[in-house]
Length: 344
Image 1: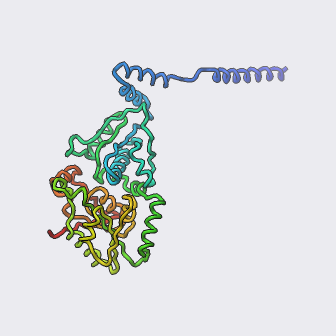
Image 2 (image 1 turned 135 degrees about the vertical axis):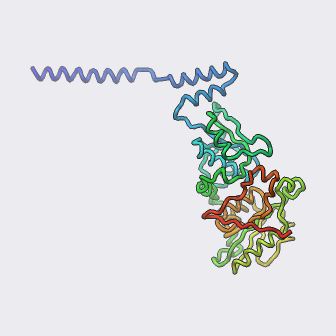
């Protein structure tokens, strides 16, 4: 009798469990989240577009992190500054950094971790955030405050040639700007070909930029080109400091450079793409730089002494104001900066 009762109760339990599972399996999925998006999208269209819908949709998801991208402008050095600012500001404001197709060249040169999107998601709208006027820069403080107040995906616009944008993530930036193996192999072949592999030789890279900066208008803006005496003084600084020093020179005006920078301890580098020139320069023990973002990144990535021209940027010029006077970072465990004048 008791056995029959236990069998009866066990059957009821099994039946209830099976029925619950069958009901759950046949129940329609919860589409309230999807429906909410479609309702918001229709609401946005009725109000003149889908931008408002996208913003409101983002607000409904408490776990959502807004995206941050940056418009690509300029050449390699500018792109590196923009990418660094992107990572720095994304870190400060807890946003997801993404890259648009304009940054494919960086992905081919460096081992960057941020993926390049073939196209930004069509259902995502981006608020443009940039400088208020050509000579009024977007400071780190203003950008951070704006990004924390904007409940939307944001597209940064500007050159961001200021180390303060990425100083909290500087270690990450150095890792991001590791040259890919094919470029490192070209650098190794160059040094072996010129017998620079001996440990007792101190290699000093010199970057000379002139062609697009050596005009009256650019010089008035605060860019300009260092005169020959700057490079002569900078080379004297290293010759006095090291017994066996050799200079490796890259330039966009090799005719001028060969005419004004001479010596038995000089090797000129030519016919390379910009990324290989940069890799050669940053692989030297120390560097002498001129002006421009390309030269700036050579100085920052080199793990040694960076000699810079003391008169760049000139106070109260456009370049000085655009960068808030913050072109040159302080010394750290990797870099030591030395400012040298031209005596002119």
